Image (cartoon, rainbow, N blue to C red):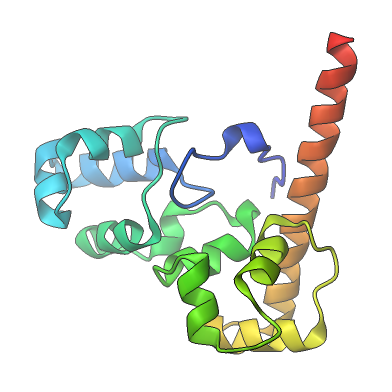
Length: 169
C-alpha cells in the first residue's frame, strides 16, 4: 500500500483520500448522468462533475455517505486507505468537530484529534487508541496502523517539500 499521498494530492475541501475514479465507475455502471446523481443526493450536477475530476473537489463526509447509499456500496470504497484515521471518520459522515463532540473524551479535543489525524502528533496514547477503536468499531491495532499511516504521510510530505525546496535554491 502506498503512503505517498503528498499534500499536493489532497483535495482543497472535503474528505481526504477521495478517489474520483470510483465515483466515475459507479456512475458509469448505473448508466446515470451527472444530473441523475445530483438529483438523487440533492446536489448540483456541476458539483458531481467536480467530484469526478482528478485533483478536483472532494465531498464532505455527509455527501460521501449519501453517495455510498445511492450506489449501494460502503463509503470506504471511495476513500484511499493511505489517509489513515480520516477514512474511519469519513465513513461515519462526521467532521472532526462532530467526532470530538460525540466522543465526549476530555483528552481528545478537536485540536488534539486534528493533530493525530494529520500526523503532527506522532505518539498515539493507549487511551486514545482505545477510545477511537471503540467509537470506530475497529481494533486498537487498526487505529494504531491508521495513525501510523498519517504520521508516515506527513513525514513523506515534509521530505518531498524539502527536496523541492533544495531543487529551487
